[in-house]
View: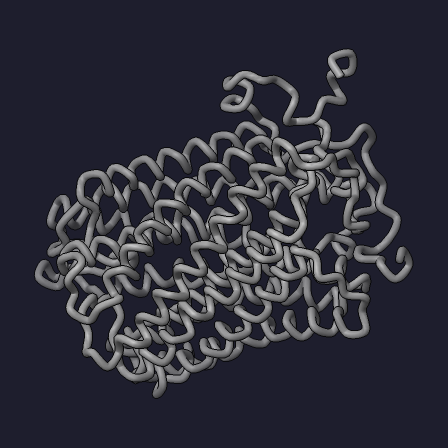
Length: 532
């Protein structure tokens, strides 16, 4: 291997820490992101554990009201901005996009490394806010809580999120330029993998929406520091303006979390069904349609905020409309599986789980898009259950499905049989036991963000906490068997799944420069019927 340094894989090319922390190899940077977001996931999950322990009893006797407010705030901040948003794009997107399009790296390798350092810097500011007591605004930073009344580290947490947003912008810009400029000969737009289409649409949201969040939080910090009336009504500001600006970013951010997961499922389903994807062009267009319509529905978070009734009707209409491209994707995945030779490997189990959880989350979103129903369940546990089914169930199922699908390519080793499938099953069962009772709680009228409640709600909360314990066990399993696989797993061949795609045409793990020769694409994607 030392005699042919160009053929060294990215794991073996240099052993010192400097070779990793100064690397410009997109594959190593993806590994750095994977380790980072796993760390943040553990912190966010710990806060979730404390929340579920508190809600076991109706008396609010585990933590104080102020502590509970800090727990759900820091849980939301960590999970949204430091796990869910960067998970698939920064890990799988970073690793796979150059491989899938036949390139040697992203267009701006140094910018890619800088984006990881910026992400970690934002994380450090947020962790400082936790170490010095956290904050109690909720992850949405609603004013005037965040501008006047909140106690805690509002400035540090807000600054951390602003900084991490620049990481997202740089990553999205890098992906867009790379997809435009570095595709292999013959890889036309009509031959791009749907994973690439999903990340292209996600990158557009990164670049167009994230600056709005940065400006909004910066204005909040200016108001809190200099007492200039922007959002705080006591200073002449408008709190509804904050909601408009915040949700203009934060609803498209839902699709930052879910679109990449859709791209992962679009790769897994045809592979383990041994069938060409049904409706390729419609699937690609649906990704762009979801990204576009996602910018037009922010107002459905504000039906009870006092905004115009006529604006509410328009936002309700667009919210129903965005369900159409999502429905197209679900229909096409099912149609792809129809009469296919389905193999229930671990990635496919995660894909099934994603489709189930996303469908439940999407259908319950229609309830929230209806003005009358939304007024009844606004700020109840119905909303909590809905966004967890979409943002957590869907996104994490997609992330874990992608990790298990491309793990042989990432580290060149196979994971054991049995345990991964059991883990996926535990996650699916535990997730539904955790969050489905919350639909019932919300419909019965229990507001979210309360740590004490009437005794008649306790049975459902106990069931939800029991489900969370099963879910936690399912999440812990992959840490152990993937770590075992990394060091002791059997060596993987270049294409253990007999999948199509350029990433499977190179070694496992790939060489530093991905391909010995630039590949030439001569066929359409997902040609499984031609290659059984």
